[in-house]
Image (cartoon, rainbow, N blue to C red):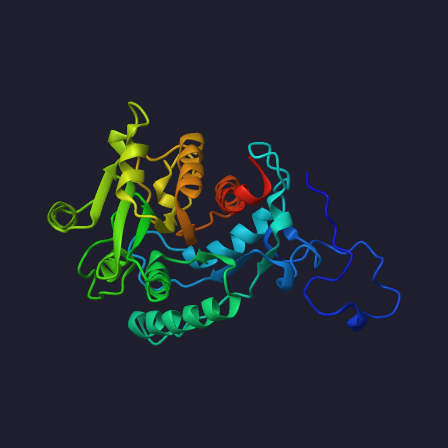
Length: 321
């Protein structure tokens, strides 16, 4: 089990705010991603930034996604910091954890408008740092993608790892539902969906008839790895990754609002993601729709490890092979 006790009290206040003589005690791990102490999670030296957005308002089956970001950060505190695949310690790139971003409860439309404005402010502030947003329901991805798109000269590609396409025109009376997240970005980005296995006829028609939409169904991913080439060929050079954890088979991640049988496994998914980060420019990403199950820690840990691996792959060229 990781042993990285912070030399300071949780939080980022300067040490002179602590009562005299207490700095040397063995304080618990701070509530930062990976439980990093202030030296490793200091903003000025961070290459990556974690943004928790615990928003949930339009889930239509199982709920609980608003607790996802906190569960991911809590589980991450027990991840070993050494990555044997890359022979590196990704946290040395620096990972800064922002406080949770709370959105208005005035309705999905106002919340998404608020998030797009806030996301733009965050992007302007952090410069070229790698931003990882933790949701929350999948609706939060659209404002993030639109914010990135407005800052890139070329049309970006969205890599959608998801059991669903989220391309409905509206769902349960709202065009800002989690089930409509990708519809909200088709005017500014191409979408390549991987692992899809729950789709409406309307969404299948969109994929067939609209330029810039590519779907790779989960049942076509099992014979060989040819699907990886199809996905990579469909992606442009600049990619935003949105990862709904129901992409995974529910035997791995049952803790999500709309689990679908027959999803992705761990190692082939990592092989694919490593290639994406190696062959494309990934400008940002989000991981959404974890709905923690009380007493069941394995899914939380898997998703936290996924975030760890995304950061590892992002900085692999700098640190490792």
